[in-house]
Length: 133
Image (cartoon, rainbow, N blue to C red; front, side, top):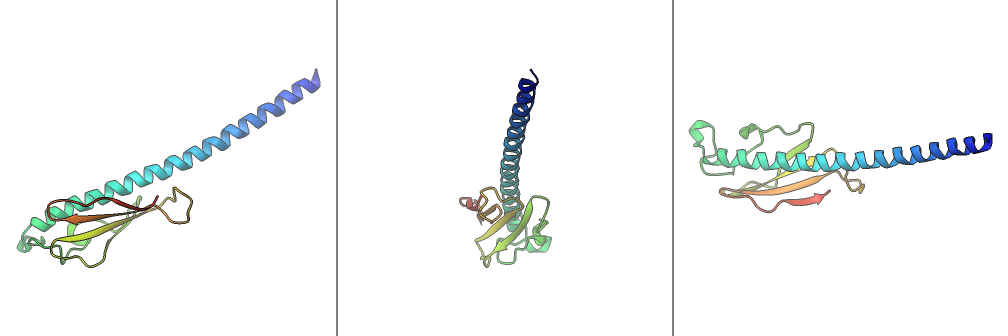
């Protein structure tokens, strides 16, 4: 009877260990997805704020119908927060610019954190490009 109890205890420990390992794996996956969603939301918020800045006259601190002089600080957007870091890539033109978000999680374990880009136009936004998930 002692051997059966010992065997059941060992089996129970193994099952609990497997359950903990699966739980940790799922938690990491959920954290990466949450970071991806947060970075996408931040990039979309920056694009919406920039379109308002575009329409505001230069005398009121806006772009005066041009994205040429846009910066993250000019629209009141932080260059980094708990979700990741953000930048304007390339050279903004009168009608468009691209904002990029770099998250803090590496969801696909390729060594590159979550990276998304979004082209912003005066009256719309382009397709969200996911460079790394």
